[in-house]
Image (cartoon, rainbow, N blue to C red):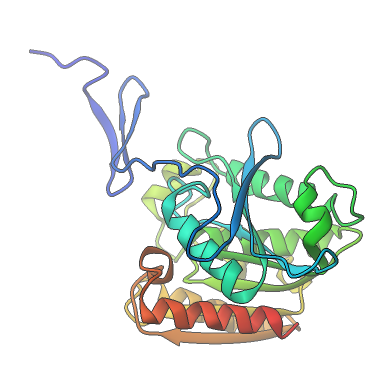
Length: 300
């Protein structure tokens, strides 16, 4: 019996998704959104915002000590190989509510559109658009009252893990090229960053048809980016884990920065697997890494 187009698999990329001949995409893991709430363990208040019809975000606000208190703003881009993940799921909620509480920051996680439904570079474009929207709050007259009232736009940090770190790095470079009035990116936190290697990545080639999927693409590997020296922040923290397949790429990224860019670069290596601090936020190692993030932020 001949299979129908809805049954024939044309592409499969475990553990992420498979694609059928009729174009249907089946993800292997479904993420359940967590409603906005006050996180009971930390007291962090959570709110959702619409940036555009295509882009949203979730904001994490810790307890505020007084009406005039301003806190550092962490702009977060989630990982997930550009094709899974969400600011609205339980994984991100636990990680960012813990970070907001412990480091005393406002955290905003961007809901960029995912491939393969939205092919790269859409994730990069959405992430930059979200950052521009955030910048409209620097004069206190933006559309979100929490950002207007509580975010210190002299202490803005970009942060991401895995593919999200790749995106955050691209936003930092573009901010340095374009310049945004009214606020300053004080630092970039790169946790277990994904960068392409010399061998083409078949998943990335499928998600990003215009790209080679290899290190010669400046979006996928900063060593090929002619604008890297103009990255718009004074310091970068790169975190790698000893059991992470991508560790050598994070270490190489540090070397590239030190040879091209004039800012301060710090490399931190811990025990653990890829993005353990997100997937197992209650572990002792994750708590120590969050402390390192907080120290980096509050040294500003």
